[in-house]
Length: 318
Image (cartoon, rainbow, N blue to C red):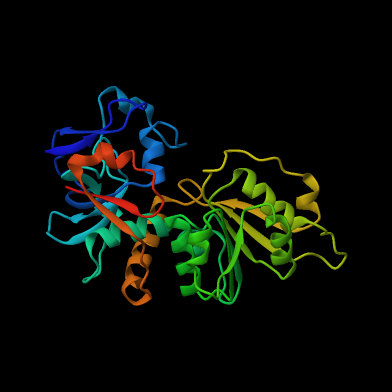
């Protein structure tokens, strides 16, 4: 079969021939229809993700952790966590039957793949890690990417009373609905962030970490220490494109209701992530979740891999 293959952590995948997977007990061979390129897929293929298995690079492996395809019964499914070395970026993949959920009729393959790969992080962060309640306030740090933009749609769907977004892309910030409060991460951001937190924030979804996270946490904990107690603030860490580490002042925790929790593979089980994907797909038609998609033929995987645009989510089509 044809597939994208990673032969080195230092180079992009290349298009070529690869052995076909064989069905085994508890697993189904999926004929792939759409496979998204996401930040976690790139991180894994570069051996940089905390779950990366570096031994796979010796023989070459197919990247991709999710996609849309047809199972051995001909049913259209969204699938996650293919069995190595058979990732999703190939004509066929090998997937545990329990790691598949149905794709609703009327939802195009590329849209289903793009929405789930970009939206699942905020869906499970809000529904499982933060245990978000209808009517609460959410601040999304780094909302101008596809994942952050879908987080806005998902927070609205789940009943957020107030949504605040941050980002550096002014045009993208301006494109959010008027109901969404926008904070540009510029020299005025600290004042705007303090004002936002003074009015109350229940949950932060952080896609950036690094320097932007330091500013958000400083604003959230500034002037705290009320003798009557401070409100709880669930800060959910989702990504680290702005840096892997930040300094944290001890008093920020003692003087406030700040709680930092992570959301990802490990802090959530694979079964929880698969269940979350099923929930997200089930409500997708009625909720209208959407994100810009760029469909690319699998044979052009190398060029697509090097495309760093944040304007769309790239989906490979075998």
